[in-house]
Image (cartoon, rainbow, N blue to C red; front, side, top):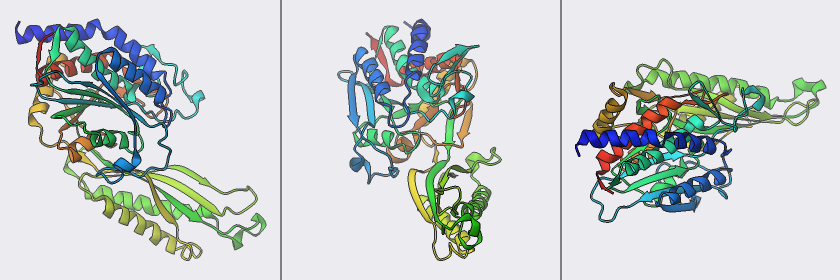
Length: 424
């Protein structure tokens, strides 16, 4: 059988299993796998791996085991239910190249459910799109990797390299799930992360940091408000100063992000403060998510953030003697540029060309993905390549069904060529 015949068989095998793939994606989207609530969805993945004859590794992440590894982010939530699952294909006498297919099962909160057209965890299909929280980011991509593997076998072939299909938690807040996979020993010659990339190759991504600023005030009755110090209002000049730092970081620039007008974003994402409507608030805490260019040193970025907060606080008579605290509580993620790995990149480009009939475009992310762990800390070229999605992290999140099919076909062709196959 010629290589072209084998490719046609694999593409048809994706189509033959595609209805089931979409059903499984919808069922997985139905699982509300918010942070700390991923176990049921991970059980579903573990069963799917077991049904395929894969070795199943399901383990609870041990924070102490990864705390001192490069890429670790500080943890401020419970890991009592933080389960990773890996399905492993290890052919006897493996001679092909190895591959990691990594995806995350955790999803972000939905926001007010009444602002969705339909309930966020009741997936629906309309006009060629699958709607639901987490369907795009990134359960459709996670499932695509598994069904791409299925298609190779359904076509009558057995991959000849080790394949690890990873379903991880914590991607949306630390990335410690992917880090735990590295700590557990999962390594490969290359990795594909099917994050929603609009069917393009993710060539670069920013780094991301999370922190809180804790501000104290001096409470008094509101009738004597001028004699107190309002902790909530004291945050406003600090926030303004941080946005000035945001503009400074944008001006520093990076070649990979030259087409983005404003790639570095500082976002005040949460704020809490005060205890009583008729009291000047004694405390306030605001959370901020900031991004940074690849190559920027995290420690130096933290120093600049802390200096900015301290300088702004000195202009307030109360805060000058009661300085705010900066607390890091999540992402401490470096930026990542896809470098090296010319061979897997070229192969993915050929597979994409076969399926889509056009060249594989590249894109840069102004967010982060788990690709950084493989590329920065495991000497593993990590390619972000996934379906077309819209409104991820927003209302009415959706993923394009035809793009899922085509991305699954591209990954299936990649598996067959990269890992090598023989007749099953």
